[in-house]
Amino acid sequence: MKVTRWIFDRVIRWLIKERPALGLPLCNFRRIRSVIKPGDVVLVEGRSKASRLIKIATHSSWSHAAICIGSLDSITDLATRRLVSQHYDGPPHRLLIIEALMDRGVVVSDMQNEYGSHHIRICRANGLAEEDNVRVIRFVANHLGCQYDFRYIVDLFRFLSPFKIFPLRWGSRLYWHYTRGRHKAVCSSMLARAFMTVSFPIIPVLEQNSKGELVMYRRNFRTMAPRDFDVSPYFDIVKYPLLNEDDLTDYRNLPWDHNGMVCNAYGDCFIPEREGEDSGATIGWNSARNSLGVITGKLSDVVPHNITAFKLRSDDKKQKK
Image 1 (cartoon, rainbow, N blue to C red):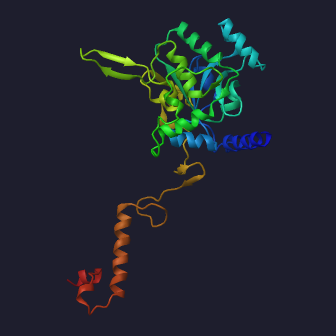
Image 2 (image 1 turned 135 degrees about the vertical axis):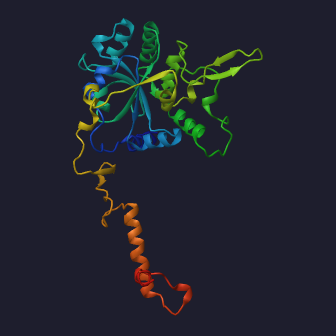
Image 3 (image 1 turned 180 degrees about the vertical axis):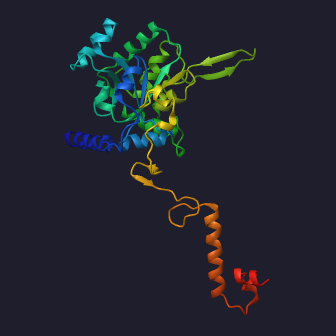
């Protein structure tokens, strides 16, 4: 049993090990702290192998979801503060999130330490009442200490994968009709269930009954993925650009590169060829037309002139005419 556990732990470490960040993040964390609020859903674009699998299965850039709860000294709900203080012993002024991790389960994390160099997206429930926002955070806080549900990830990958070998309902826990216990959780399903407790929609199922009335059904929270908060029409995307809005009033004065460098990605940059030049990776229409004329002229020198089918017009022949 110890050997199996040792192998399992090594596999988990291999899956969650993240590659180093490439380049600078698109934001300053002080900008994030100035716009984020408790109750906001934080989507993360992970850089680990597990994150890559989740992004492939969900057809999205987001592999992880967490919820912001603010700093410990700013939590007004006493029950939530007591739960958080039992699982967090860091500085009380740090910005905190609650998330479900593969290696640690549901924990309280310092957002800047965990995702200060990641590409993230902030999703805010539009019109959520303050008292319901407190209930959502308290619901998530009640899951602190729960284990990570690895079976859920397997079932979710089966559900979202385009390759269907066996019927999805065969042995899949995503379709269980009864509510499971609180001993295991996953990031997106835990947050989806939290918002459903206050009847806030994410991506509901809409149907029109025989009377022509609209009926809204709650979607199974076990089938929810991080991308659903991004595409939900009931969540607003909060922007946090590196530069302030005042700096964007004159976008032409932004600190652009003066050499005209164009980048495909970080570390993959080049200077495109200008119109009329012969060197570079890209040429204009005039350059392409001139190059075609040069090639045609060279072919006319190589192809035998006694074969009528291969005769090509050259500039010299045009001048003689």
